[in-house]
Each structure stands twice: as C-alpha cells, then as structure tokens.
Length: 100
Image (cartoon, rainbow, N blue to C red; front, side, top):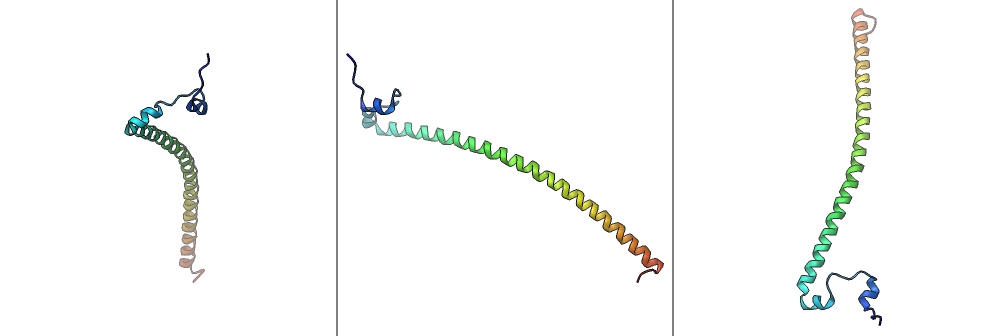
C-alpha cells in the first residue's frame, strides 16, 4: 500500500526540512536559531563571493591606472626637459644680446 504524501513532501519534493512543524511549534526558539544560523551562513558566503569579485575588478583597474601614471610621468619628464632646454637657450640669447 502506497503512503500518501504530506503537503510538505509535495511542496518540497524529495527534500525534507531538517525540522518538522510539530518540533517548531513545541520549541520555536530552536527553530528560529536554526533559521538564523542558515541565514548567517548564506550571508557570509555571499559577502565572500562579492568581495572576491570586487577585488578582481579593482586589481584590474589598479593595473590600468598604474600604466596611465607611468605614461603621464614620462610625458611630464619630457616636458620638463624641453622646458629646461628652452629656458637655457633663452638665457644664452639674452646674454649674447640677441633678445631683450
């Protein structure tokens, strides 16, 4: 004779909940603590996954920005040397009296 499925078995399929409604009704604090532990565990895993994804993204951005900083540093060095050379030429021309 086949046993009739309860409403919980029908809704959950073959997965049975770890605590029955009767146990929950007798000791609701234990049931709520179980639910809280599951929720905290889920949130912990979710934060770890989010942080690792964010860290990967930020590492990529840092690498790109370091490359841009290197390019701008090189451009600044070139412009400083060009300015220095121009200032030297102007000073020499002023000493020679070619310009006022």
